[in-house]
View 1 (cartoon, rainbow, N blue to C red):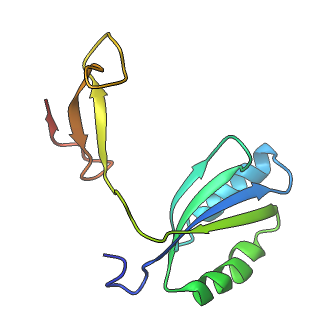
View 2 (view 1 turned 90 degrees about the vertical axis):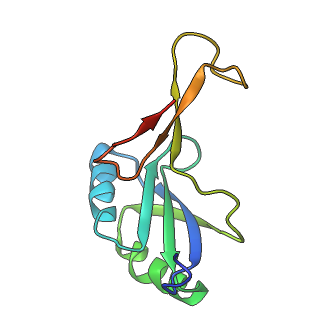
Length: 127
């Protein structure tokens, strides 16, 4: 539990590179791997190039994180942040399609749930 570890302030950081080039994107993705506050990072389409999920202690620590860590990355063009007010759902279950047929709705052909205990070790699939 992040709150018990005093890291319960959750931020979604929407980031746009100053110039979207292959080299800048690769360098950013490499750099993100070594920043422990960033627990998830996604390369996205739309208005932003990346979405980061960040855990810190509080607003002051996030401000420091933006200024010292993200601010030190020269190819970042802009940042927008959203702060989590409360978690509604958190799950690592994925629907696995059963076969041909519709993919939406109660009869959508997705009947098996996959529980991901660890990405490298998928050990249990149920119907």
